Length: 118
Image (cartoon, rainbow, N blue to C red; front, side, top):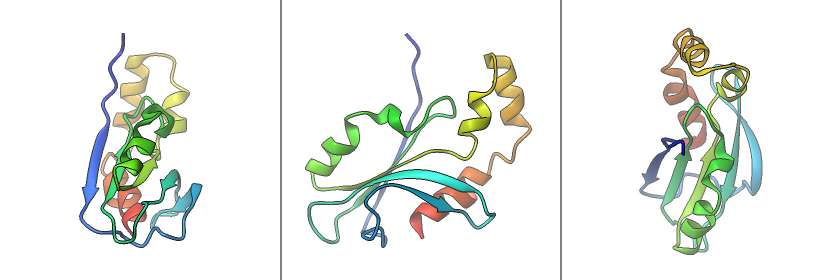
């Protein structure tokens, strides 16, 4: 059985995502497109949980977690990383590591996460 690493961030207050509903694409400051799914909170000004998958999977890996968090009172954003398609094209773990190492590994934080927060 493989284990996947997933990051979870809780943002203290709603961050202007109320206009989103369902699957969306966001454009980052460096003009990359990232896919997200937004699950609105059941009440206004709820905390927001941002779910970030491992580089080897996408936001669908969270399965039932977003709806469970939503039922618990959170707004939830499940996002894909910018390198999802690039990593999916690799044939093995060694190639995936080389491919990822050749990329700007700070971009998912400095641009992708910022696009979700904005």
